[in-house]
Length: 356
Image 1 (cartoon, rainbow, N blue to C red):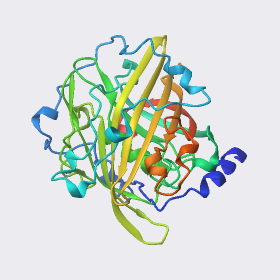
Image 2 (cartoon, one colour):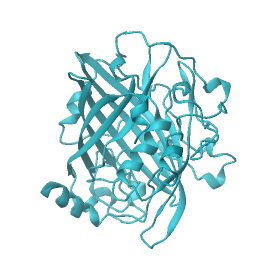
Image 3 (cartoon, rainbow, N blue to C red):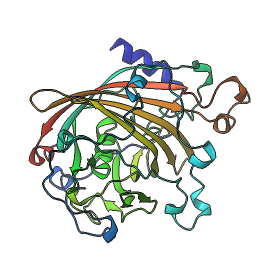
Image 4 (cartoon, rainbow, N blue to C red):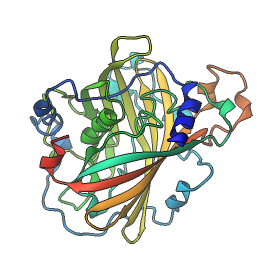
């Protein structure tokens, strides 16, 4: 508790006027269960997958030689995505369609071992934060400084109540994260005062290419949604939400997140490591954010999985230069903040997942 309070205090000075937080509490529980759980087939046909019982096959072993696991204990983490110019979102007001202003999404979504298939109850426990280049470098534009400024951990330092997550196994024995299901529920757990209004994702065109185009918006009412097991792999997710602001009242806002790069390491029995690189754009604040996630998953007995999540926040000099002049005092390819959580997953069925 002492560690949590200290880090929250350290980050308090960084809080930005962002309330990009998400909740399903605006509907009765019986209606909330249907959000992203059932609906009509309004996706383009190219974005609908065929499903079948998942064969017991070996997990994906791409980039097996990369020592992703070492990043969980490293004192610092380097940026491994494209240049800041390539990785950033362009202003949506200058584009004909929001699909055109996002950076290129990764063509290689993460595929997980078969023991991740299905529904899980997940809990997060905050372990601490570190600042590899010192706190003086940090600004209010640092990912994690404000609520919703890091989609992966929307409220740094907070230990949310357990919530359900979902992984899909398709007919090719590929297990992948159901972003349309998981992202809103994570925000629901980390910040309960805001409400999700809708979610969209991109999709894989084929095994070697993804589309930056977004699917039809799935609304909190269930309109425009598609059944969970029919959703394809995705490397981009966009949310509309209504949340509280520091000045009082509530405002409807939008955020858009693209996975730029990813890799896995699965050569240890019952243990799996992943790393993903993200670009996030909070539309209403015209705020660009960059961060990298490292995750470990270890299968234990009785359908239990434990692991760690580490998020490294980056602050390009062109962004820091909006608030300060000493942009030459640090390396913007090195993390300026690192946040660590322990996680615990317990396998549950769809019926239990619907009770949250």
